[in-house]
Amino acid sequence: MSQAASGPHSPVVPDPDDVDDFYDRNNRVLTELFGGSIHYGYWHGPNDISGLEVAGARMTDEVLDRLDVQPGMKVLDLGCGTGGPGVRLAKWSDADITGISVSAQDVALASQRARDEGVADRIRFQQANATRMPFEDGTFDRVLALESVVHITDRVRALKEIARVLKPGGRVVLTDYIVLGPEIEDEDKRAATAQILSAMRTAPMVRADAYPGFLAAAGLTAVEITDITEHTKYTLGRLHLAMAAHSREHGALPPELKLVHDMCEGIDWVEYAQQPQTDGVVLVVGQIPPARD
Image (cartoon, rainbow, N blue to C red; front, top):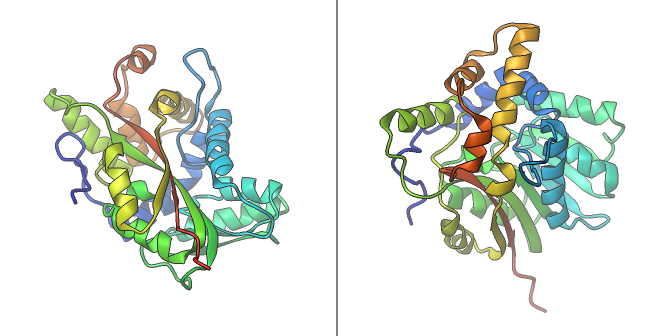
């Protein structure tokens, strides 16, 4: 089964240590730029003027609504970042939540956030590799993976590990970056895309229609596979504006983030959002079959 799409979206394949180092160095700035979490936002259309903080919270809620957490459930936030989604869940649920990240700095910042927001009794964070998690089989009722598998080249391996730690009847909700349409023909655009993805330690993107096979190979049943690009395609434009504002106020961005900012200079973001997208975001819900009586 071919997982990675070839052609224009072929960044340098990241390893966990590289992802760890990237977030250790950049997570504070990324959290500030994105308004509290480090993931794409969700907009209702071109007339939605929400900033990244509001749209990011809306995306978190889209995922949490599908997670369907019930009182007392054990939930894993896989790729927890600096704790935004996990802490948000802890505030309105009576769940027992564990967040993991390969980044020690992520874990420290997320733990501090949980203490600051008064939910440290309901959520804990630890450093761990998503493809070799330190949990027993069947530990969790739910797994949240908001833009974390984007850093893992072997999606099936990641999903098998998620399936291993889920209880019978358990559910995973994830978002992933996807390739859309034909390959980009312009050589400069292909190179720019690859550079941006490599700078952000993003693994080669896949296509949404590969996900039924990925889920089946991991022993998961597909509940939902939805292309949400029409709602997320405004993220890069808002992020570019936030980067420019940060540079004016605080000076130069960290090198990888400056590269992303500089390569996006001159883009007409209104026109960009109106054009057919070459990449986007898929929202996936998978479930472990229930135990047989």
